[in-house]
Image (spheres, rainbow, N blue to C red):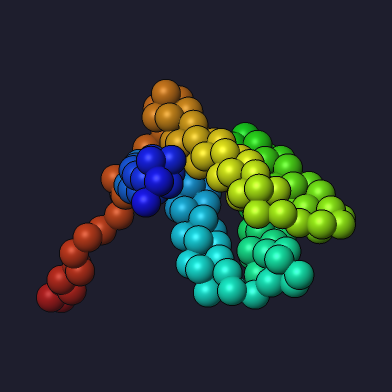
Length: 154
């Protein structure tokens, strides 16, 4: 595993764990969207069209649509920033799609650019959690009941 891949994976796991435990409903929905897209990209990775990563681009399109939906439904700034970075990812896909002769070097540059944008998207989610903490908002996990409440005898 390349050092940047390891950094990307560790950063993702840390931000997802912190967002799940210290975030609100929007941050938890964001974590679910990120994880679903991550798993779906592994399943659709073999789907290619003349060396164009069609499966990954379809997953990224659905991912951006989910982030835009989340941004329009919630009042958090990080959702708009993550959706904007997702749009940049789609531009990268489009540029690779219209490239007439895809060489291995161009494919590596495409993947590297999308990884960099992915790091920025994850940092947006982390920034949303930090902003929530700085504003003094309680995380959802603080109000969660972790045990079943016994019924009262009347």
